[in-house]
Length: 144
Image (cartoon, rainbow, N blue to C red; front, top):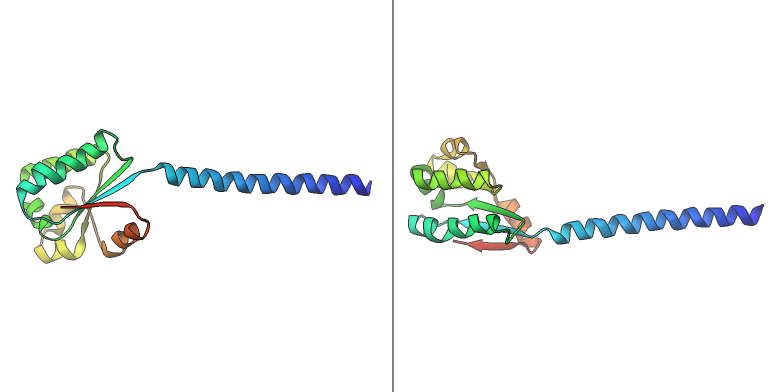
């Protein structure tokens, strides 16, 4: 009876360890399989936005080059976006296609465009910490 109890306890212990190992493997696989790109757009030049930054960011998502794409509006690009209807239309299309669009609140506030960006659907928030976290996680980051 004692021996059977010890065997039963050993089996349960092995099953518990197997479950923990499998959960860790699943979590590692999930995090490892998701490719992420953050595009930091800081240029106030509309040609850079239209012909390079937006074209690449949008295609990175549509063509499935990356699973997740985030466009970060930083600095002079906030003012440019707030005043350019064509860029606004492109940002709206990116949002519809699943691209996250975020903007630095300090930058947006300094240009007086926070409300305009929020009305476009841009997530305006402090960006220093989120960008730092991306860098520390070795996420793919492209700047324009």
